Every structure is written in structure tokens, then in C-alpha cells.
Length: 230
Image (cartoon, rainbow, N blue to C red; front, side):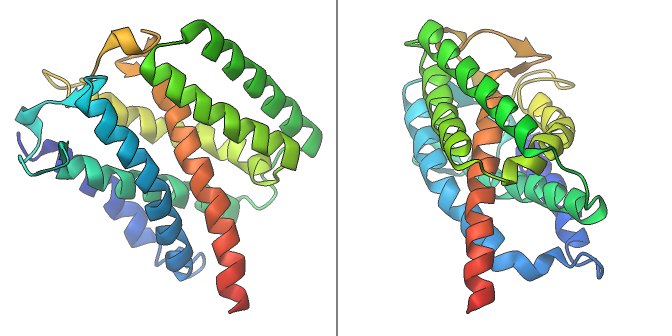
């Protein structure tokens, strides 16, 4: 089963990539903006990954990856930061394409953002110094503060589409954390997180995913404007 992590990445990426050539949506036209944003966001997340792996905040079961590593990370883990964001971002834009009026009002969006901002600060206070929770919610707090002050219109739609993204997210992360298979592919040190899991997935992972995808969407929208002008 050393190929399992690779197979999960390929399966997650391949179907959205194939459908990105669909003629009506033609998502592939934005490939430069999408992949540039994904790669830029991946850099700090990979550095975070390397550090946390080194200090045992989480780690990887060699039974499920091919054994090729870079800075202590399996090659499959590095691919994860390309394949999974691409699939999730494609899902977001696909819903915007087929459901053009799918959005929250500015007022509702601001209320949700303020609620999440306050909640994340409370979690930070009570969870400190648990490494995964503290770093994760520090980033999430910064993004929510940015969104609240800027009144970012991306969230009018992303709050809805993220709920859709969470369905395949929990399936994929469930597999990675031991659902449906004998052992986990990625293990977590519960001393460094809240110890609250949805199935086998630490609750922090949902906020981790939100931060990674929202950061990517911010950059994608900026790059789309820049590339369209040029």
C-alpha cells in the first residue's frame, strides 16, 4: 500500500483537472493565476509542515508512501499542496459558474466574519501553547481580521462554497487520518491540538484548509486582474 497517498493525490486532482477543460466554464483559462497562487501559498505551508514534522507535531506512516522525501516530507505530502487546493478551488469556481447568484449579503458575511474572528481569538487564548492549534488559529485570526476590515467580497460566496468543499475534504482527510484503512497515513500528536476530531480528522484541519484556500483565492483574484490587463 505504499502507493496509497500518491493515489489519493492523483484521484483528487485528475477529475477536476479534466473538467477544467469543459467548454462552457473553461476554467483552464485561468491556469496561470490559479497555479501561481497555489504555489505561492504552498511555500509557507510547506515550511510550517517541515517544522512541525521535525518537532513531532505530526508525522507520516511509511507504510503508505513511496519513501521519497524532501526535508523530511514525503513527496506525496508536497504534491498534496498542489492537488488538493486545485481540486477545492475548482469546486469553488464551478459553483460560481453554475450558480451565479449564489452569495450571502454583505451584512451576513460581515456578521459571520466577526463571529469567526472572535471565536478564533477565544480558541487561541484557551489553547495556547498547543502548537498546531496556536499557529493554525493565529493565521486564521489574521485572515479574518483582514477580511472584516476590508469587507472582502470573496467571502460572500466562499462561506457557501467552502461548505461544499468540506464534503470531499473530510473524505480525503478521513483517509489520511485513518478512516477506512487499518492505520493513518498522517498521524497527529494530540498534545499539540485540541483533541477534538470529526471522525478521525482533527477539527483544526478544517480551519487549516479554510486559511490555505482563502489565501489562494485572494491571490487568484488579484492575478486574474493583472493578467487580464496585460
